[in-house]
Image (cartoon, helix red, strand yellow):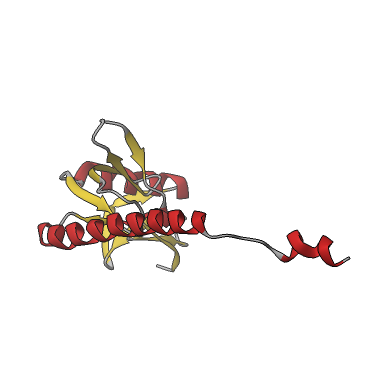
Length: 155
């Protein structure tokens, strides 16, 4: 049997048996004859169906990194869309959305040990805003006369 490796699709190796022209798949190099198909699209569909049927997903909570938002944002991860390869989240209002690949690193698993750190972080954010407001008030008192303002006096 002459076998040609085609690709690794969702953790499954898809191979082509050149002798009989059929595609077959293996997971962790264990051949599974149940996944044979005459078409490439068909073998991918069998893999998708198998993963979907055998996936037991348990809802869990995540939060967005405090450095991204100035407030504490928590979400429930309610599923994963295998075809899109994206997590589906639900916010406190019940609105559902998918997380794009580039934003996945901004969501972290909810960890109660981080509560004190978050409190401290948000307190610093509050102090930073107060200092920024004070700075703006002081700046308003500053008497400003620019070179542009006085240029006419010298020409």
